[in-house]
Amino acid sequence: MERLLITGAAGGVGAMIRNRLDHLAQHIRLSDIEAFESESVAAEVVQCDLGDAGDVMGLVEGCDGIVHLGGVSLEDRFDKIRRANIDGVYNLYEAARRHGVKRILFASSNHVVGYHPQTERLDATAPLRPDGLYGVSKCFGEAMANLYHDKFGIETALVRIGSCFAEPSDHRMLSTWLSIDDLVALVECVFRVPRLGCPVIYGASNNSATWWDNAGVGYLGWTPRSRSDDYRQKVALSAQRPLPDDPAAVYQGGKFTTDPIHE
Image (cartoon, rainbow, N blue to C red; front, side, top):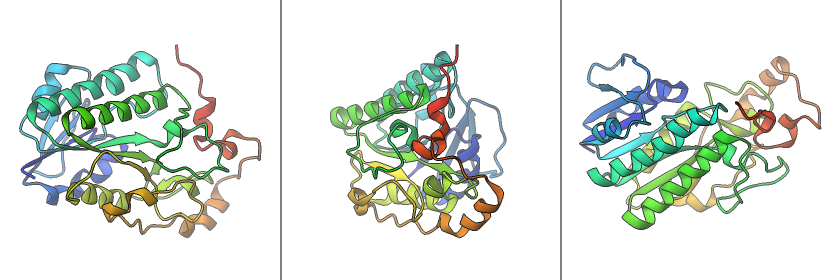
């Protein structure tokens, strides 16, 4: 690619991967609503509010691909979620359409299926069961991506990220953990495969306790290598196991299912 845009580059996930994707394009454009400085002198930094259509139009201009990590990443007031995750997603896809961007990685979330019980194993055909307004916004983003794929041919990887941290820190994460290395490898596969489409991909590492099935996206060539099992003993010593009726042990979305609607 000539230029790759990474939104949400100052966020938790963005900060961990933004300097590991330089090889994917001749130029990297990093963006976030917050001002920040890039460790890479070669990267271009553009501060942008995704809710501002004009700013997003300028942000996307000249880009060939987008890694869209930007937006509100936790349960919050609906007006904040709407501006970043709903208006912002529309603005991004409209800008992509107008500027001819043909491939996007959209950071969706496991919280689009958060009310499924942990006893179920889910694939891409599982019904959406969002566990909060944040999850609803990610359902909207997936729907928007499908629309722009079918109507305009913009390919999107719908990556339902589990828990992307340096290592798992609680018992639920033994099923949902996605390592930084595996996420970087997934981004590489998404922008390397000749034909992407608009697939759902569950963002989890090679965890034996996983609830998710990625058999339908084998064509991507993504093989997660990290294992939460390597941290199982550490988690057992540092984190209390939830009671059987605790939402953290019942639902795939864990305690997100207990979050109130913020006024």
